[in-house]
Length: 399
Image 1 (cartoon, helix red, strand yellow):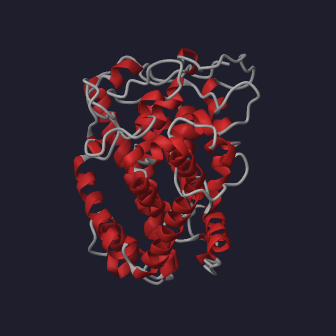
Image 2: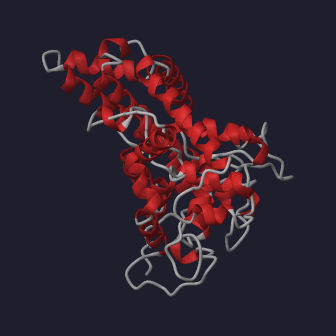
């Protein structure tokens, strides 16, 4: 089904996809990227995001973001950016929905612990773990492992934050210190994922949508939790100017409404900045095909330099006042203990549930350590907590 007639020439056209590792019949009602989206949404890993931490643990209130609601917000923003730039909305949405599939229980705290435990075995990286999930660990089909996603979707998942290597295959960026994570060079795909090139504009849209979403909703959740007040934000780059606008225009409305108005304007302003700056980059670079995007040598979608500077200051403020606050750090430390203890216990021989123990005993690539890592990283916060309580006769209760 061809639905890409209005797309820009440098957008990802589904009819031009390199295809899937395992051939499938065409769908009469959906494009290839729509099929990828649906496969992701129906996966177990996607549903588990409902019970995985974003910043505040799920028990603290029904209105705090979880990893799932964060993902849905990223998807909406990615589609908005893609539509404004005449890109493929379906691929942008698909990549946004998949971008956090590899996250551990208890957010980045769990990731840090597993990376430490796995450092001698190729480390742990949530982007690469998302690839393991969609290519190997999700087994919903009779004929093959994984979800059998298109090349473009796999490329976008692994490279939405930029290239992983230079032209000589040497790790760059955040992979330069520890090297490429386990399995990244053996990802099963129909063609080379070209780790030294940039991904599609749709992947770049999903990546910046992630930043837009969590900056806004982390402020919103921190205000709701009482960790921040609007007055504290008045002098913070980016959001401060919006707070002053809202308080000056609506001085008599409740603080809650002022907060919602502030967040709404923050999202709008940052999205508009991304769209305007990307349009300028695209016009200046004048790409004529998706291949031009991959070989551009830099990302074309992102914040403008002025917005990037403000956003960096905002991140520093949130790190100091929210992410490292006692309210957040106490459960983070407990989560680290749970993830580390579970990994150590299962790695030392405690039987895992389901088929995991059988897999660990089958001499798999990566050894028992990697199977244990896959098992623990896939846990939800409640399942990890209940398993910890059972194994250690503990009474941790985040409810």
